[in-house]
Each structure stands twice: as structure tokens, then as C-alpha cells.
Length: 328
Image (cartoon, rainbow, N blue to C red; front, side, top):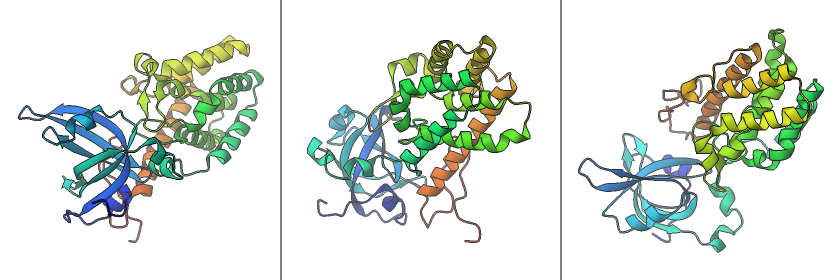
């Protein structure tokens, strides 16, 4: 198979089901998990992908590269060769060979860019707009608190994904998600005069800042030690409190700002420390949920092929998504 042209995940998903044709791709090993089949034999559950999409497949214990693949760290770039196959209508290729890329191969122009999914908007333009949004916060101490946090975490925030898998799970995804929330808030705030605009904008820009500590990994995202032990809600609360005290934000506003961060996940089962209990916290939590779900929709539509009618089931929506355009 060495002479096969390299195919993207999008190319593979566009092939008619049942062909069984051979393929070769350069992909990122996003996740590796060891599981046990009903017969007691071990197998590897793999998630592979590039900037155009992902797929899951299994590698069983009798495969000659089972142990070598098991030892590969998540985030490894590999050349994959195999044959197209499907399970329950989903792409799940049979893998023949996985070869880790060398540092020299990864350094070639476009290698990393082709592997890592990026936000659809230009990162530099988003960052410029983001900083202008900070500067536009009317309340001085809230603006200073927000600016202080981003002076500490700004470079990490710019490239960080918003999630490992659920929404905006790609480079610059956290910046995109947060900025889109701010845009939505500016459109909605005139409808709700009971909600303080400065507190809402500061809360939106700061709500997920703990993810810059919770996540790590240059190519594939994983949770850090602190992320596992504390979680982004607590980590974000600590950042906000630190810089709120430094900016001498009054106690009432600081408590309300901290509450937005602690409650923005909506439900304790989703990671919230408490339920939203102020007008601003309710507002931010709802806008967060809206953009998270619409982010799932937008990404699914971007990755759909011309032959798709429905997507695979999206856990965040508890449903498949109709991806065919109106009138098609």
C-alpha cells in the first residue's frame, strides 16, 4: 500500500459503504484505550483523526502491532494503512499497519496543520476582537480583573480547545467559543435590563479560563493532574478571585463574578459547583449552553460529506443531526 495517495478522514467518510478498498492516511492518534472483549481477550479502542474529522476503530490482541500501538502516547502522529470497513453504519477501518512519524516528517511544511483541526475563524482577528471586548467592559475594576487574568493566561488561552470532545474541541476553540458567547450577549442584553452588562461580559470572558490549566497536550488534548483533581470550574474560580482581589473589586461584585464561574456549567452532573442563583449567572449559563450546542451543530455540518443525510449520534445533543440542506 505504500503507493496509495494519502486520504483525509473526510475523503474516507465520503467513500460508499461496503467498498472495502485499501487506504493510507497520516493521522493523529487522539485516544488509546485498552478494553476486554466478551471472550476475555484484550483489544485497543482507538480514536484517529486529522483536521477534517475523526473515526473510531479497534485493534485486537492478535494484531502484530498490538503492543507497539498500545505503547504509543496519545497525540502521536502516525501513518495508517488498512482497508475501509464499517460498524453500525460508521467508518471503522481494519488497520493493517501504523507507523509513527519521525520528527523530521512532522517538521515538513503543513504536516502539523493538516493533522490539527483549527477554529474556522481567523485566530488573530478573533484575538483582536476579544481584547477589544475586554476594553469595552464599562466597570473599571471588573475590566481590570478580566485584563489581569488574561495577562496571566493569554497565550495559552488563544490556542486552547474548549473541550476534549464535546464542543469547540480544536485549536483556538476556547477563544472562538468565548468570543461567540460575548457576541450573543451583546445582542441579547438589551432584552434583559435586569442583568448587569459589565458583570455579564466579565463573567463570559472569564467563565472557562480554568480550562487553560485543566487541559494539556500540543497535538491531542488530555486533562492535566490539576484538571483531574480540581476541574476547570474550581481552577477558573481561583484565577478570578486572585485577580479580583488584586484589582480591588468590591466584595459584592467579586462574589457575583465568582458565582458565575462556579455555576456556568448549569447542572452539578455537568460539572457546576452550584446552580445559577443570580440574574447574571442564569444569563451566562444559558448563553454558554446555547453556543456549546450550536458549536456541535456547526462542526458537524462542516465535517459532513455531500452524501450524508444524518450525522452519527452526537452525545451532546442526544441525537443524530440532519445535515442535508433545505431543498436538497
